[in-house]
Amino acid sequence: MTVHFVGAGPGAADLITLRGLRVLESSPVCLYAGSLVPRELLDSCPGDARLVDTADLTLDEIIAEMTAAHEAGLDVARLHSGDPSVFSAVAEQMRRLDLLDIPYDVVPGVPAFAAAAASLGRELTVPGVGQTVILTRTSARATPMPEGEDLGTLSASTATMVLHLAVQRVEEVVAELLPSYGAGCPVAVVARASRDDEVILRGTLADITDQVRQAGIRRTAVIVVGRVLAASEFPDSHLYSPGRRRS
Image 1 (cartoon, one colour):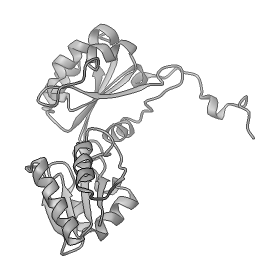
Image 2: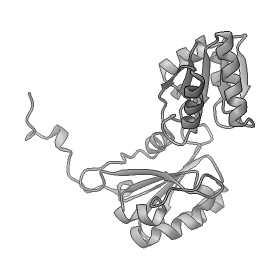
Image 3: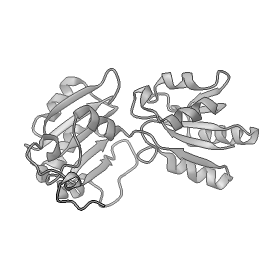
């Protein structure tokens, strides 16, 4: 028996990996984040599978479901939105499973920031413009941020920044980023990336707050900040340069 933590992708059902889909098709128990995971994915589960929406469950209740499956010798597909490696609350589940000696593995998924970049038609690392991407969030109504990871500190590098779970605080986010990035810095907000009801806003730190409010975006969105969003004059990558030594 194994608990499989599966990245369900950013929203579109067909962005789950082949490996993740195979896990769904073969697991007699599926725990899923009902508010974020597309319902179409559940159609891939066996017809008699136990389907458990974890949206309103506590960590103890989730682990109890996994423990019951373990005792019955049943594999579990644990569906998380995006990719389990970031902002997925997988770490504390793994810690509990380690204590209970319940085996698990992880199937990666397409993260929200990658889906947002695809929707924007932009590479987040552009030669000569930006080669660093900061993935972060804000602490309102969530676990406090560790010391030194506040937006004021992180923004000092002016690297490309992608903020998750922050669109509800867009005014505060802009205020914290303005001193380092400046009012004219390009910004994009992508809500429900890859879904049929996706919304894309493009602007600058000077006007993005008004755009977000007018669009009524309150959740399931990422904020992307950085010069790469508007970069047009930049050197070609050395990767395909004729001067690059090839074996």
